[in-house]
Image (tube, rainbow, N blue to C red; front, side, top):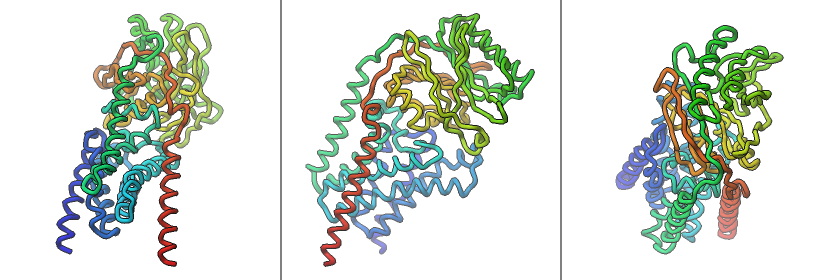
Length: 468
């Protein structure tokens, strides 16, 4: 027992430490590639329950890197936060246990593929059942590692999740079978080379000059009341939008849910600004109509009726009283198709994938973050840009003004708190890239689930024959 503890405790502690720095709001992306390795090496050498308990406790402890954000920033109930940590730890533990089982029973190539497949399957199922969509996927730790990020254009976030676990599984198998481990490492290497080649290809389409504005001034925080306060806020933002239009911005994006509008004309400042400047303006507001509340983004076109998009994925519990939207809203321009979405919509695969399928080359996204998660949440949208083949223009208060291309490169970015009215003007390609992910969807996730099911059936039949 003492000898086993000498193996288990270091693996547990290293896993917790790696999990702490590989996850969180500012992940150190290289660590996620080796995060599973200590437990994958340990698991075949101890009993299944010891391996499972060590893996669970190690990853559960590492998840506490988010405790300050969950409990302090989001004021999340303790039980809910611990439940999220536990679900995350289970999602790490089950692939470790499957790896252990397949290493012991063979053949080893099943272990090489089985653990990544189960990781992908669990990640995908979580995205289908969670009110936060894909939020929390390990794939988001790689947003700054552009060659790996390109896998999202082929297989969505699941491609990155697969590569992360495949790399660790291959390293764990090196002492047992160098050929099988080498095959796994070769797949990872080829994927990264393909990603680098995609980065070298220029993005198609005409360039679009875009402007972004956000203000974190005290009087502009929260959702400003209707009437004179809303009129004052809208006039201030309209003034800044006109100034950016004078610098050549063809479209200006403002944050989400800035103030309450109760009647037609309450937002006239934006239409007047669009008419006078000749630029498109996207502004977010809380539209109260017929007893219902809509988190709405409106696209103002010079001398034309505004288009309105209602946020589809609402943030609980803050937006639970709101009515979710259903429809896409886009505009066909000489530069390409421009689509509208709002903040949390981009945590989910849809509506972004639907916009991609419609040929969007530019997504205009008003947003509102919590300062602490400016990078972690603000950059989730960049994954959608790579998957959907469009450039991203995202203006958040309490976060970043971000412009990124469809390769996931941040073209320009500044913090919303950097000035009383933070502004950004830059140029980004406006063409659409029809990605393999748009064509084939969640093929890797579905294939992974089928593979795991086939492996489990094989194991069950094998056990049945042994018992007979």
